[in-house]
Length: 124
Image 1 (tube, rainbow, N blue to C red):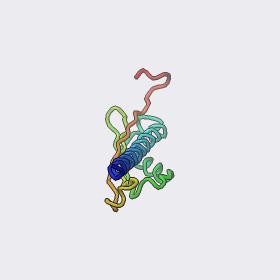
Image 2 (image 1 turned 90 degrees about the vertical axis):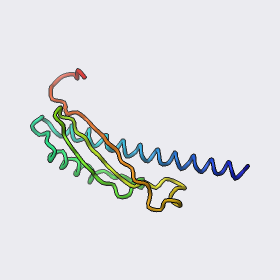
Image 3 (image 1 turned 135 degrees about the vertical axis):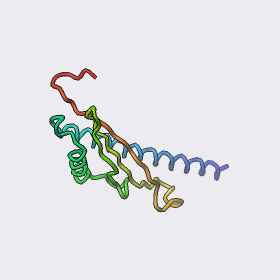
Image 4 (image 1 turned 30 degrees about the vertical axis):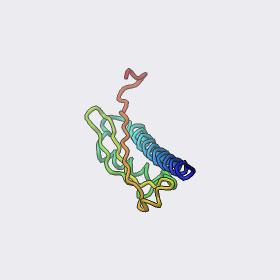
């Protein structure tokens, strides 16, 4: 019975760790997209190449901590309604699972934010 409880506890800790690290990557993608839209001041600046430059600079400034290994900026795009989309990927090493999966688990995240094109309160 004790072995079963330890197994259940270990699986719970591993799943929770993976979830929290994945959420941290998601938060990072959202913050990065938001930062890009705040950096762009006009819709004329809203191009894919400018967004990529801002995203790369943001990623260089941010300290991702020990949660991520091989953190990469996969794609940055700006669509026709001036929404910025950021795609990140990284390898996470959840507690207790690193023994079974020494290279970690590949996770991805997508963050988006829309460039505000008018002054005044938002009507969205």
